[in-house]
Length: 412
Length: 46
Image (cartoon, rainbow over all chains, first blue to last red; front, side, top):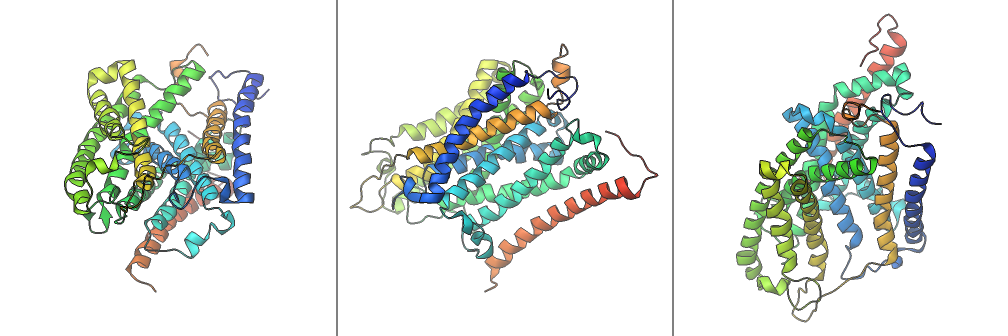
């Protein structure tokens, strides 16, 4: 029925099967939309946020998708600025994943601010002394860049490409894409960093507070570094999942291995910096505020020392070792283990820096503040996943996302 | 009012917006010119 829209030379599932798949994802999306409307019409009383948790599940999800969406800016940087030409075979998908991650982050923020009609206040009445203002500026601009990077892909649809104006527009956009990619890298560096700066400057919360250079705490650099390191792993993970669902090889293994190798070195250097940062914080910064390391990891039902070991050793050192070694990258099981652990590592880091920061007692008469999200918070956090599945499905079906697909699947 | 923070924030914002705006203007303008005004030239290729 829709065969005229499907790229030439590739095989796609029947329309009824595609409609069923979209229907299933759409049902989950609808559940999220109901929760979103509840939050908008009834207010933030629909959440379990309270005086201890001004930041909660949404902000963790926000920071996690932004970190994982970092694959777009870093792969773009490697492809257009550094000149790693092989990455042209995965850059389209990295851009699509980045587009989904960033639009999801903006959607979550639109729900989180409680009064979306006043969302523009952050631009017009900007508090220029806040790290979050910088995040809002860069995030919005970078989403614009991602849209510009995604548009040429849409213009390559078989039917749209037949229109001369759109064909030429797509061609022109490709020509100057390096300029947009460089702008995207500039914007990403600052907003990823400023997201890290938010906990790092909280001098009233010794679990989060870090020293740094000029106005930037060390967490500023660690966030950018970890996003550049783990973002490409998320791109590889989603590519792998797409390959399993479509039962096709979509990207050549040498491209995956190159990206995994670069990620491995980024994770390796990041985790060394993170270990030094943690050691200095535990030995010098926190004790100077009257805290010992174990004050942050005991006398509560959830946050044990295990979370620190999980973040730094299991989801930091282990994936770095796997992805740096050629043997690790050549073994499919080891490769995917490293990739999954790296993705998990970025998520755990953001969880710790958002939610554990809120949980730790600061004053001697306080106790640990635990928090359980409401179903509305959970549903609105799952909403972007369903939205991502739908957008990827449509893009995969109608756009030439994977330049190597035809070559890798000649029987189609 | 216009302290250093304002200049850095607004400067950075408009720096990025200018690059994005000029880039898009060039792409759309050139596509429009090549399609509708420069009929003698056919660069219809991939």
